[in-house]
Length: 376
Image 1 (cartoon, helix red, strand yellow):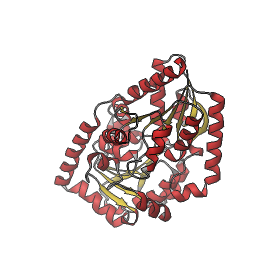
Image 2 (cartoon, rainbow, N blue to C red):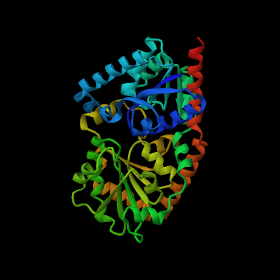
Image 3 (cartoon, helix red, strand yellow):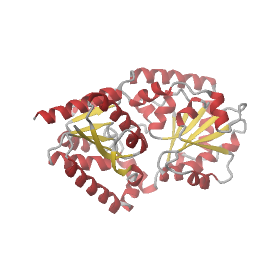
Image 4 (cartoon, rainbow, N blue to C red):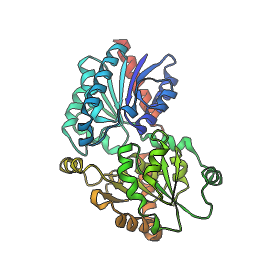
C-alpha cells in the first residue's frame, strides 16, 4: 500500500521516521512518499521536499515568506494527486498540514493526523476544521484525547513517541561522551538548547550565552544540529566561553546538571532525562502580540501543560533576559529544595505519559486505515 507522510520540522521528521519503521513491519510492500527530513529518507521515504525548505514559524515570518509557503502547498497538493496514496498522514506542522487536510478530504483521501496541533491552546475554531477534514486524530498527550472527544472528533491516545526514543537510547557512557567532544571531566555541564530552526536559534542563543560569566564553575555546551550548520552557530557565539556539539542532544542531556531550553519538544526531552531546566521563548514582537491575544492557556512549555502547574520556570519575551535566566538557573542548580521538587514533579510527569509504544500503536491505526481504503 502507498503512504504519504508530511512532517515540517526536526521533531516531526524523527517521529515520522519511527512511524514508517513500524508500518514496514506490518506492511511488507509499503511504499512511502512525502515531505520531511533525513531520518524519513533513511527509512525509505521518497521526499518531495526537505523540511529545511518548509520551516517557517511565527505570524510575521510566514507572512514575509508567504509566496514560498503557498508554492510549497501547491506542489504538495499536486504531488498527492499524482501519487494517489491509500492514506495521508500529517505530523504536527499545522499551518501547512491543515491546508493539506482540507484539500485531501475534498479529494476523497483518507487523512490521519499524528501529533496534534496545539488547538487546545489557541485557534480552537481549528477543531471544527479538524472534525470536518481529518478522519482520525492520533494524539500523544492524555489531556488531548479528552479535549477532542468533547468536540466529537474520532481520536485515540497512542502515548508519547519520546518515550520510544528514550527506550531505544539507553545510557551514554559519560567518559566517552566527554572525550569525544573535548569536554572537561571536572566541571559539570549546563546544556543550552536554542531550538531547531535558524530563526529561533538566532533569537534565543545570544541571550542564553550572556549568563555564562555568572557560572564560572560550569561548562556550557550548546546542543547544535548539523542541518543548521556549524558556521551559523559560531557566528552567533562570537567569543563566548561555550562548546558546540552537533546531533548529540540526548547524550548531552544525559550528562548535564541543568539546561536552558527553548520552548518546544525539547522541554519535555529535558524533563524525561530528569534535567532541571529553565524554559525560554522570544518571538518577533508583532508575532508575540498576536499570539498573546490568541493563546488561551496558562503555560507554554509541554512540561507545565501536561502537569497543569508551573513545574519549570518560563521566561517569555521581555522576561527572557540575562538577569532572569541567571536567577532561574541559579535556583535549579543551588537550591536543593527546588531541585527535589522539580525531580518529584518529573516522576509524576512520566507516570502521566505512560509507557513506550506510541509509534507501534500509531502505525497500527495508519495501517488499518490504509487497509480499509483498499477494501472499499
